[in-house]
Amino acid sequence: MKKNILFSVAVFLTILSTFMYLIVRTLLFIIEPYLWYEKIVAFFLLCAESFILIHSLGYFLNIFNVMRHPNANKSLKTNIPKLETFPPVAIIVASYKEPLDVVEDTITCFYNLTYPNKNLYFLDDTRYDISWDTPEKMATYKKNVEDLCERIGVNLFRRKWHGAKAGMINDFIDFVEGKEKEEFVFYPYQEKKRKEKEKYLIVFDADMNPFPDFVEPLVSIMETNPNIAFVQTPQYYSNFEFNRVARAAGLQQAVFYEYICEGKSQKDAMFCCGTNVIFRIDALVDVGGFDESSVTEDFATSLKFHTKGWSSGYLNKVCAFGMGPEDLGGYFKQQFRWALGTVGLFRDITKEFFKNPLKLKFSKWWEYFLSGTHYFVGWVFVMMAYCPMLYLYFKIPSYFSRPELYFIFFAPYIILSFVMFFSTLLQRHYSFSDLLQGILLNAISFPIYMKASGFAMLGIRGTFDITPKGQSKALPLTSLLPQIITAILSFGAVVIGILRIYYERYPIAAIAANTFWCFYHFLILSSVLWFNHAEEKK
Image (cartoon, rainbow, N blue to C red):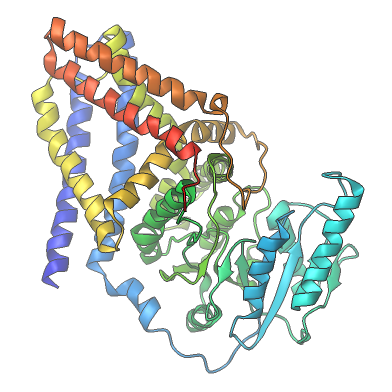
């Protein structure tokens, strides 16, 4: 108890230092006698810093809530009542041209689930109406899918393609509800025949393998809380041991699935992440199914649930494991898809808020705002990286000329923030090295986030494909030019900064601070070459 109180005080001081730095930083920007073009550069830097500060504030507020109410999420783990009855559950995976060896592992895990009243479905969303390979290979793949499902004993469902994964699940829900259409094709390969309509729907990605006891605790939570539309569980990558990208991507996920998700769940603002999740089918029917207009249909559908009065939950227990992206190409594809859909929904969140701000509690709007704006971080990184360079190359100041006030308020903020961030995750048994890898991988993805968020704000849907699995290929250096050029420019600025300190001397504090940040960004961006050769020796 005493430890929790001390920790809560430390979090409170971190939040306070964040507020104080933001206020002082803004006031000093306003009173500084910059030239007009200097003011523009300084304004963009202030916006970038404000973004970081606001999102840091959101993270630390979640930690503060978790510390204040430590038993709120623990109860989902430890106080799950034992099931007396077993309502029917549909276990599904939707697949679009996924490698069949990957799919086989997943549906084999379906078969081994211990829940007694389960129906297993493979939703084959592969398009056989367009040419993506030779006719012979397409026919072979289709036949192999049927043979695989029949051999393991998993029902197979197909339909006329529309709306990608969201459209496929919506059609499957129609099938479950008895609203069959002519284009539905169903192969009842499961030995135990389907006798009644399923009450719950559990969704997995094609590479996610659930543990045998995955279903029971989630069904128990849903049965105990009839207003919950879905319960999300974490994603855990198991292919990290000898792959840098998969390991860093998994650690990046870990930051999200720890305090952030627990904090969102306490505010009843947890959103669906698309896999390892259970849905109440009646809730899906009530909101009209999955949102087919977004490439992140899970996030968009979560907003539909919450605005219609449904609740959500989060069980912080690893119940399944899967495969993370194994090279930068695969990781960038994954991040582009997530960023495009999330920022695209931010426009809908903003419209919904101004149209009916009382539809959700402020705490929920706050969490959706943070989630919807997260992927603007690419633009933020560029501002943070190039503003110090502009000062060193062209003497365009973007910081204020009062370094003593800067350090008085910046030092407590940055020290407390870093200590709090790393110490909270160390409590969850993550090391400094682990967290650093996730931070680096996120930073070098800035061109992907910029492109995706730009497309989303312009309403451009973009093009993307599934995340490749079972391969690791280095990208050509031409694909990494934004990162490499920014690293070279940062290093050049460091050299110029050192020369200016030696020859000019004044203002030495400003030159030294900007030189430090350029060197900091050079080190971060250099890691792109390390990540580009993702496979490590076993």
